[in-house]
Length: 199
Image (cartoon, rainbow, N blue to C red):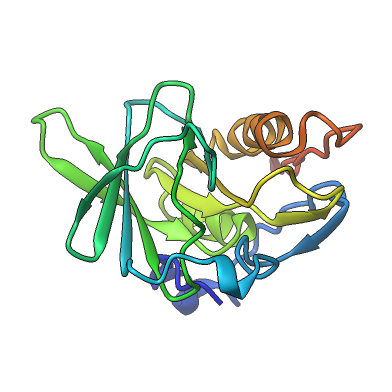
């Protein structure tokens, strides 16, 4: 399974967290890793890291691999870097990486320095983390949809603070459906945040 950046801080307070999100509407058939269904003989084994540099305020990211007229990224040693456009979609002409490649997200701060955005393995863990740090921006990897069969192998992530998770998740699913499935997921599943409990 691909080793994504994970939120170490969620382990400590996951069990004790009292805010439990509603589950997103069931996706069609899903797997937990976007590379599990890729053909092992058709993977890029020359990489150890992927580096995705996000524009400000981006909340939806989709990377589609093996696109004939896609971009190669900038390869330095065992690392490939992509400057993500405002659309949030990267069409890469590279093959999907082998599972142990680490993918890291970065964004320039107000001083122009690049800061890593911590990424949760799934969006339930994102909610747990942002319950403790509601103003901090985290990413979360979206589940991989296996059926209907995607047009190409892809990964997708939602990026947001606590208040924006629902909108980021839903917009990422719409983008993912369009880019990887040719709009064949109908209806597009959605995430629903729990109602705020007022004592």
